[in-house]
View 1 (cartoon, rainbow, N blue to C red):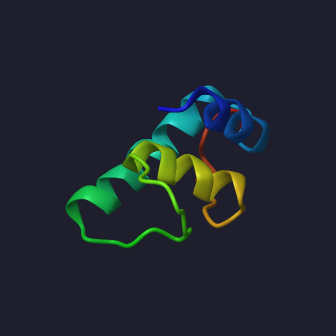
View 2 (view 1 turned 60 degrees about the vertical axis):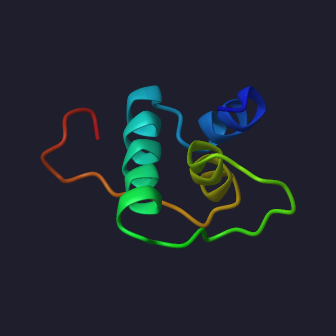
Length: 71
């Protein structure tokens, strides 16, 4: 996982636990559900980096349930 992408994505999703869960869910979608990336890249990226770039570029978002603590 690229450190620069992680730092940039952490500015978008400030809670590290939520960020990890969003990335993890997206990686699963890319690897096991056959979903295609929402970004284009000239370089070969790992699924984790694709998910982080999608967050950075505003292509991927999340929603917390109303009953989620601290929401």
